[in-house]
Each structure stands twice: as structure tokens, then as C-alpha cells.
Length: 234
Image (cartoon, rainbow, N blue to C red; front, side):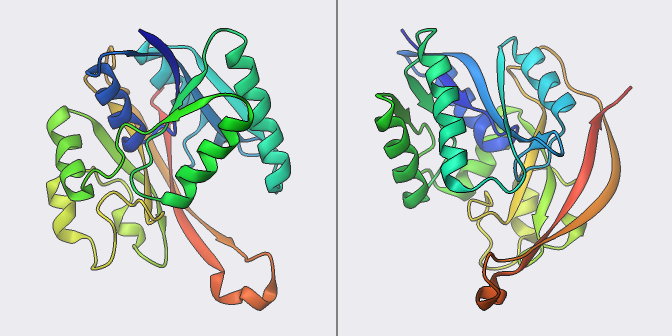
């Protein structure tokens, strides 16, 4: 049995990767690894607050390694920080890292390359799965994943708070990947068959954040996201 770390985004794809690894001989998830924005104390891109992330790990009865990323960190800084996290886990016997990526070839190549530099391995339990079928599998597995972030070029804020299920597929606009693999939306898991109990949450305000391209010449790439603030219920 090989001990591995799971890159835990807090959302449905990471949850499905964990679910599949639970039913795959040869692997045992020993720890979760998550990167968070240092300034906001939230999961990068998803916007999941650290308090909710910690609730997930507690219900999975797994240790959680949190990596803080400085605001506006460049790629070189990001790579250095993540290489340190990998080295820390290698020191306790973990040399394989699992990811919930589905079909983005460049992202997979990047992850494999970075880990190879550290002498580590990457595995992708969901690789090349049909994304519409994967949405159905999320629903059938009992994973409850709520949309908490949407890319405004693809989805409106009315999708915030919705759960991932077959009904969602009927409402997604043409061209939007069912799993949001191109960044159309992100989720947080509040219940799963591998949770000791569900997480009761409080839905707060909706926040809009605009991001600019690094170069004004690429102004067409300016983009924005709606985030739903979801916190553990008191």
C-alpha cells in the first residue's frame, strides 16, 4: 500500500479523486495538501475559508497541510513554496501526489514536471473521465458540492449556492464544461460518504472581484469572479 498526499482544493473534483482512491487498491491517502491565499486566508481560486477547509479535514480524519501563498506571488515564488511543501511531505515518507485534474494537458504536464524535479510522482485518478458522467457520479456517490465561485464570462451569480447534480447540467449555457474544468465555476464540499458528519454552513454575502491581465495590451483577458462567502455555521 502506497501512502500519498491528495491536492485538496475543497471542491468536488478533489472529493471524487479521494472517493476513487478509496476504492483503488495500492493507494492510501495519508494527508491533504492545500494552498491558500495568505492575505485572505482562503483556498486559492475557490474562495473556501480556512475554517471550512479545516472542518472538511476533521470530518475526513486526515491531517491537512496548509501552504500560504503571498498575494501576487509570481510563478517562480509559487514553485519554490510548493517545492518546500513537497520536500516536507517527502521527509515523512510521502512521494506520490494525487490531483483531481480531468483533461487539461498543460496543467498535468506542469504538475508532473515540478514533481519530477523533486523526485516525486503524480497520479490523476479522474483523468479523461467524461465530465457530464462525472457530475452524475458526484451526485450518485453522495458528495454534496455547492458552487461558491463563478467566472463572469461564463456564468451569472444566480448559479452561486447551487449543488452539483444532473439538474445543473440542463441549466449550464452551451460551451460550459459540466465540471467547470476550464475554470467556469468552483465548488466546496459540505458532505460526502467519507465525512464523519455533514458540515452545517452559513451562506453570507456575494462578492465580485475583478482581475486584470498582467499587460494592458491583453485587456481582453481582464476578467471577474463572483464569490459566495460560505462559513461553518456557529
